[in-house]
Length: 218
Image (cartoon, rainbow, N blue to C red; front, side, top):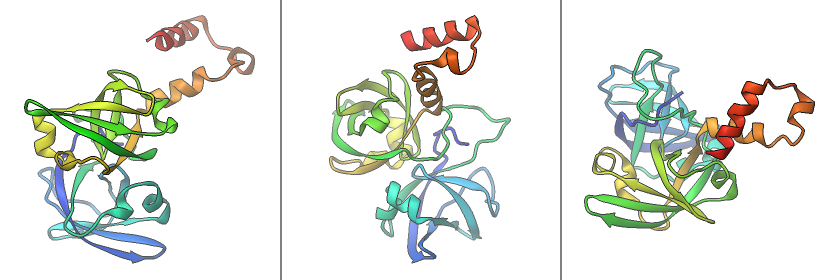
């Protein structure tokens, strides 16, 4: 489980195609201490497992499924990547609940300057847009962001200077692919509300029905 608050950026040293997937060798340093073999880490959004701890970074394996459904298969040596270690139960929860399971790859349509900030428009499919709402949360390349607005084919975000300085999103250009993960709470609520015969399947208390009604109105 992650928060979408990037700890540091790393540099992809190499990509070795092997074992039906690829081993990513990443140079990185963490202020939170040394990495541990087997721990989970978010690399540009997807959750990977540390298979080998190096003196100046780590190795992680990405399966063919991960390579096909995310941008990791398109990364090249020398590229910067957003990194976040799994959240601690006793730490601050600064972003939103992020699982590290990418839902789809979107495409940057526009990146426009607004003073020191930038407004970015991303095109996405219905499998993503159905779960987005104005002022809701979305994860882009592992970064927790607020949705400014949703259109028929995409959504807009405002990237503040701190985000631009501390993540790889500063380098986004029209046409770039990005990893997208919707808010898992929105996914569960959407699924719950989508059951046409909800009460017939399982009795629901009046209090729960009222909560669902309020969420739907919001």
